[in-house]
Image (cartoon, rainbow, N blue to C red; front, side, top):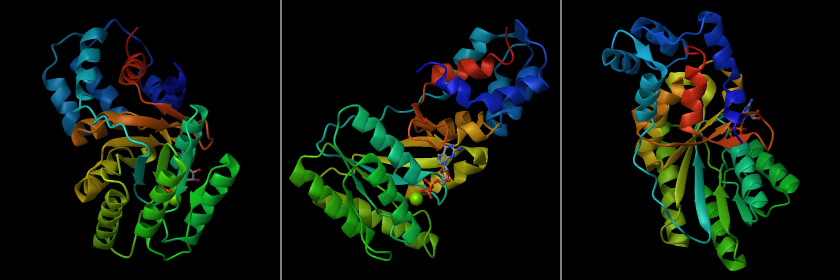
Length: 287
Ligand SMILES: Nc1nc2c(ncn2[C@@H]2O[C@H](COP(=O)(O)OP(=O)(O)O)[C@@H](O)[C@H]2O)c(=O)[nH]1
Ligand SMILES: [Mg+2]
């Protein structure tokens, strides 16, 4: 899969290469500051990186510094059948699309999958997931708009248990009438999952729209406070020059980025590799 992330970061690197016309063997802290700001790394993190640099910086040195920022506590490893994943994030972030991409991925790996249409706030959200289920030929549990998403989660897990299905992916609403409604609803879904299968959900994935750059950090923090996030998926990396924000998002939240979305198709999801990411950003400045 090498090269996938590089292609996904094309808008970011093209923008950087326009700003930095000439590649070099070493760079000054000022040049690095410019690179990082231009890529949309959050300013106080840029300062922090710059402050520890000598007057001449090599690629190796900066590579180590940047990779260090991606270190976060390792995600808890859980083995469970069914393995239940709850997908959360604001409206339009790409939750439903990412569920379809993940389901496709799991299916390709030979696993069985069931979907739960837990975004019952909007009728269109239910239909969207149903249409993916149809296209992927997957079972789905869906109710009418306005019904209890906790019940959807419960039924999906029960069905997975009864049929010996490997993986459960549960969609959720990104917005309700108020923020506290949303927090309560998500917390309730988490409790209900645990009731249906102790220990579930095994992974709570936060979907972040990559075109928002750093402004997504605060929003992500709120979701993390609501239910505790285990890993992040950054979508729409293909549509943004703000690819540097991944560095600050991962570092600020101390959460691993697990996947990146790089388009609207089923295949447009790749595991995130910090090494390839850092290498791609650095190659715009260094020889
Ligand atoms: N270019 C691009 N578009 C995406 C990506 N992920 C999702 N989208 C689009 O973003 C829009 C919102 O996605 P959706 O899954 O409905 O978001 P949700 O409201 O969080 O469920 C849709 O038009 C998707 O096709 C991605 O990685 N790249
Ligand atoms: Mg949706």
